[in-house]
Image (cartoon, rainbow, N blue to C red; front, side, top):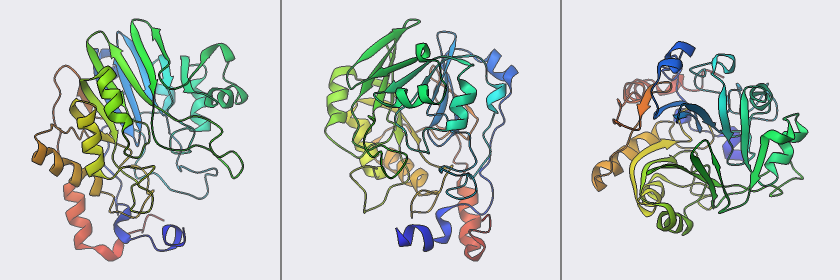
Length: 314
């Protein structure tokens, strides 16, 4: 913990803002089904069957109990909450601060039809003022069908809590999203474990996996995967396209901020797995997937050339 707070490597966050492709309400209104946008970290905006869904919405400046300290965003969200279209639902994996944003939930309470949560997290949302009839809570392997889509809460190897006294009192999960024959996997947070193969056996193959690839460290492999484990989990799931998430927005570990992108792309080359790395706010199509640009590499080269400037954003 001492190293984490006081001895962070200079390259653990960028010396300039991460580039963002701005999104407008008009763009979203014209977007076809199967459109997906990374808004940052593990926040994904997804259009299926004419409706919009969002995962782990975090729009705050810092992933922290307070907004005057804690990990600060590398970039602004590509779109403000007020500009989002009405949502069919919010999908929540667990209650850590980098996945559950109190202010965002309060703002989305009137904009979203339902909140799909794990056991206990829904109670927290109701306590924050989300109408109880909008909150649907699930344990592992439980599912629900909404507007022709099926959502299943599936296992993950992680933990939960937002304070010193509520550790593991709520459940954490990954999610399977089924739209007819099309399947999407959202990992939430997880260490590598046999559950990925079990999920792949029940639901695979997946057209797209949204996989945690960031904030890893040798001291906590049980709860966060290194890129090599992320790739193996993707293959256990029988995934086709892999889109790495949980990176590029907050400084939550000791590795270079670009390391998750570089390593997972290289692993994709080695294992012939297509890896998509869209810029924050760039549209990704489920019907016509593409790898996207390696947008972080110019920033990486510039930062390597000027290491003493790092952490100036603080």
